[in-house]
Image (cartoon, rainbow, N blue to C red):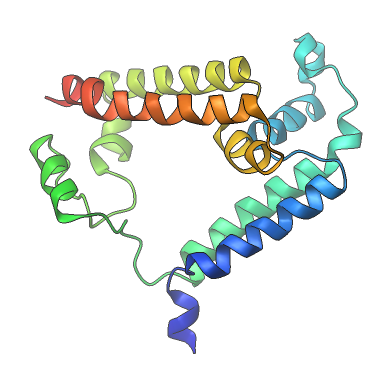
Length: 187
């Protein structure tokens, strides 16, 4: 029994659970997305004094904060109590491809040490890449009117054409990054 809990849940369990959450959010007139949750957090801690984007009734969006706390706690519980192996299950071809770029822990670790170890965080190149990536994700989320989770889960569930266009853009950008820009950065 405990082994079944510690394994990743199959799509036919997790998919309907996500769909039921989305049904209740749509039924109650709410949208889901982590960037919206972060916007609510920024407004709650005083961001509305620095930027007009955060000037809204964040108290009406308190459920976003509760959802964010739940996501953080759920992740903590999953990794510390419900996981026996934190390695990402990727194909052998991908592991070999990543090893060519110096990611020797591919397939054995959740995060690549080359990018996320304390040593890597003291490297100016790594810090610059992380800062640039964070800026691009933040800019892209604001420009697209939401993040990947909001558009891909909530927007597509609500049959919104802008979300479909955004998701296609996210995937195209990811493919361009992995196949063209990524090799230039880590060659």
